[in-house]
Structure formats: C-alpha cells, structure tokens
Image (cartoon, rainbow, N blue to C red; front, side, top):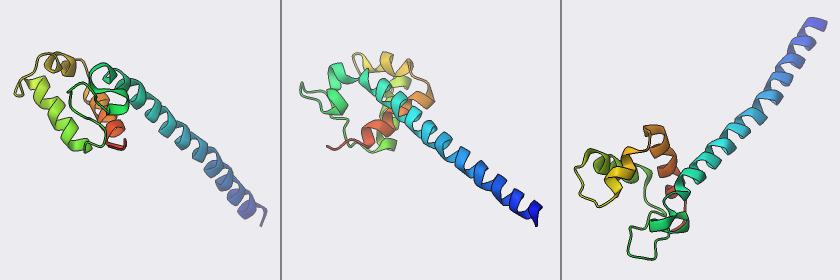
Length: 106
C-alpha cells in the first residue's frame, strides 16, 4: 500500500513541477515574440497598427504574414527595405513575429 501511495505522490509532484515550467516556456515565447515584433514598430506602428501608409500587421493571419516575409526574403515580392529585413530573421523568429501580430486586434 505504501508503494502505491508513494507512486501517486511522485506523480502529483511531477505534474506540479511540470505545470509552471510550461507556463514559463509560454511566457518566454511571448516575450521573445513581442521583442522581435517591436523591431517592426518604426514602419508598421506599435503592435502592427500602422499610421504612415505601411501595411497594417495587427490581426493579419499568421500564415499570410509568414508567406509575405518568405516572398520578401526570396526577392519574389518587390520592396525597398523589407527584402533585406526579412533575410535577417530565422524561420523560428518569423513564426514568433507572425504569431504576435496575428494575436493583435485590428
């Protein structure tokens, strides 16, 4: 009987330890996404709410933004500066940026 209780206790402790870790990972991912997206603010406004004629990124579907950045990177979509900027991001960073702007309200 003691072994069953010990095993159950061990599982509860394991789950208790795992929950905060996953919350920390999610928070860290959001922080990284917000920091990367902040680099877009000069042209695209705070949180993607452009005011100066640049594309509004807030609320843009994640896959659409990923596609746009890929096209800029490849040179398929003409741009003045975005082609160079897009080349500076890793695929993981592009995904984080796209997630951030997709979560913003238009």
